Amino acid sequence: MISNKVKDLWRDGKPVLHGWLSIGNPFTAEIMAAQGYDAISVDWQHGALDYASLLPMFQAMRASGVVVGARVPWLDPGPIMKALDAGAMQIICPMVNTAEDAARFVSYLRYPPLGQRSFGPTRAAYAQGAGIAEEANDRIIGWAMVETQAAMDNLDSIAATPGLDGIYVGPADLTFSLHGGKYPPGFDREEPEMIEALQAIVAACRRNGIRAALHCGTAEYAARAIGWGFDMTTVSGDTRLLAGAASASVKAFREATGGAKVAMHKGGY
Image (tube, rainbow, N blue to C red; front, top):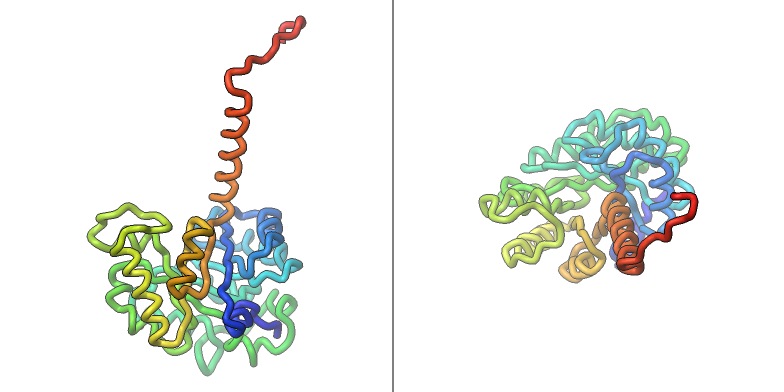
């Protein structure tokens, strides 16, 4: 079975740059995968796509050598196992609020005797090579998303779950959930209590020997997060990058043309 380059980077003491795909299109996935990310995940939870889009997106990214993954819609064995059989090397599971949730997630992620994943690596058998039954439990990365007050209350017990590789922070939902909805959802939090919460998550991961990841809006904030101890940071995503580049292009055009008027042709158009 192929190695997981994310684990290879950690073994060398290096952080992981993670990309995000919400547009259900193989060409978009191929373009993003060619830009130099270490890993890219397809957002099956909130993205504009379904399984019929996810699988060809994985195929489109294969040539780049990027580590492919998926955020599944929910803590449900079906999508988790389908994404793995499609070739995912990491799975991000949303709304893991208790140690029991985390243990269920791990059980869906791992083959026996460590879990209850059903064997049928339809595409993975070709994309990942031989030895999946023997090696997948060690190669596949499982991230439990901490994004609620309940999850923060159970942080250490979640982080202590046997077989869990790391905690992935969803800052939008976490911000929305903490402090009685005091702050609106969003990335790149600057509120002292939110930064304290992020650092508490890193500390819990360190205490329990697992990894920490954070979804960020900008490269600058992601670099700060690495400084706090996060092992993987997601920097924006396809929809936000497309919107940002398009907006900047339109703004540049408007500023360059100023109040210029289009010359009328004699033909009247």
